[in-house]
Image 1 (cartoon, rainbow, N blue to C red):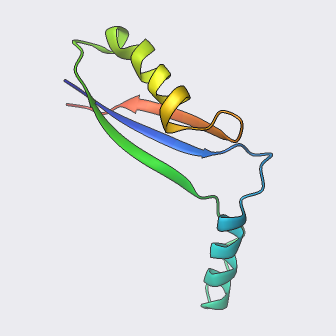
Image 2 (image 1 turned 60 degrees about the vertical axis):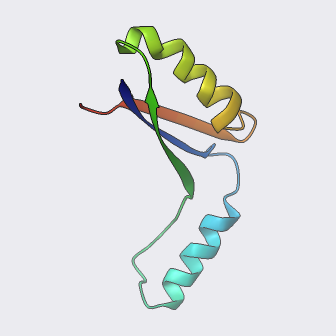
Length: 82
């Protein structure tokens, strides 16, 4: 069983309105050192596969077709240590 951590976030050229709102709230709360905030999603998956090579295509398909919107978002994934 592989444990996979997937991070999904908006592409750099897409305006992150939620991130801007959080940055404004953080600044208003007196934390002036925060220059920018980008919001994303984190997924932890358990994939039934003997190794990364066997699971790679399935993980990529899950990320591209289900966990992210390729028009707006990018993703990265990594297998977590057992």
